Length: 209
Image 1: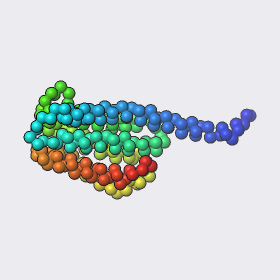
Image 2: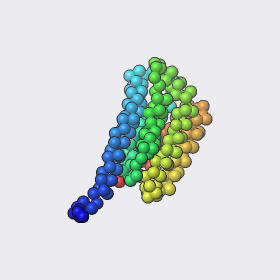
Image 3: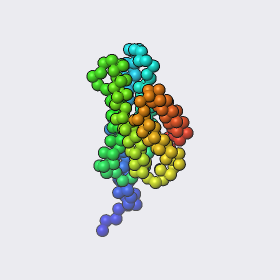
Image 4: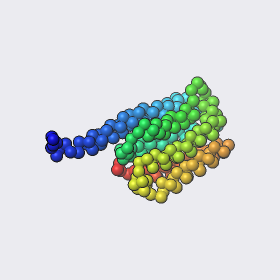
């Protein structure tokens, strides 16, 4: 019987770790592509507003929620560094994470739709389709929770009780925004969420760990 040297005894474990890291790296590329499409769409929309400064009767809802979506997309990419904590990968986890990332692209299309030329028409479209936009926004928090659970109980515990409050607050904001017909209220909801989310990110993610 041939005995392998000690250096080969844990070869299977090392291979498994390498395989997990390859899975994470491969998925990270796909997620980056999807988020890149969403961010590009929103930035292009904001750029058109600067190039075509048409007055829209003080309606700045689209700008505020564009900033919310941009911050959310960047935060999601940072958040998904924790995918490296997953030790058991399968095809459905891939599908789940890619679906989560796709929510940001779908929201960007509702903010800045295709084939609409006038800026006023774009904002009117967003306001008319706000129920779909904020439904996706609410769904993103359910995805957020499942995503966190996939990464392990220890990761969930490390986020503290404020993580739960953030999920609830985001869902409540989305539900209120779906029902409101007041542009100003919709804008202030966006500003409030933007400020709160900025504080959350700054406090919790001061370092990549």
